[in-house]
Length: 219
Image 1: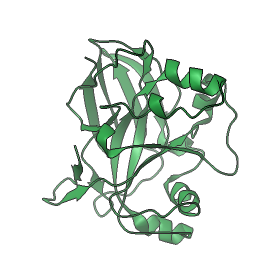
Image 2: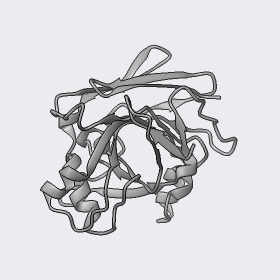
Image 3: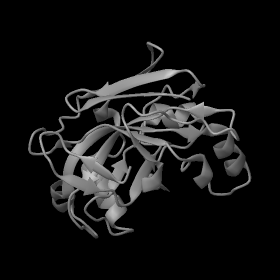
């Protein structure tokens, strides 16, 4: 998967950078035993080659025994921004989608214990799942949108977007102060509490109210 689509549009957009925000819900930071960011969000990266569409399968790597789900709001960047103001950050958002940031938690913990980057816990093939995007011209976030995920029909994650420590425009403002964002870049905005292990055969489904739904199976 190298491109994405926007609902009610025939235009395909090539994926650029995939920037991810961590610890953006206080309850999730706490459940992982991490400090809560106060001035600047934690940022890491995925790659375009990680990404698959909703409905495709997540392939469980054989070198990990602890794969976790993380349901997230995903932003589509629509234009180049650097050192953006809040107003410029808002205007840079072209659309919203539902995303799954699949994480090899055992690899992540081992890397953190050694003080090393946990890149390989995040960038295995099929580790990023996304729905179609909704254009900002069709829908504006209110902050009250429900975000949720179930595994085999059992709810694991449920919250509202308004619980994010850094909202969408603040995220773009902060990230653009450190790197240039370009049209086609995706931003995963963090996950609420309730992350848990999934295994081969599990079926995941979730969504964000008024944005879309997402589903995948672990194989």
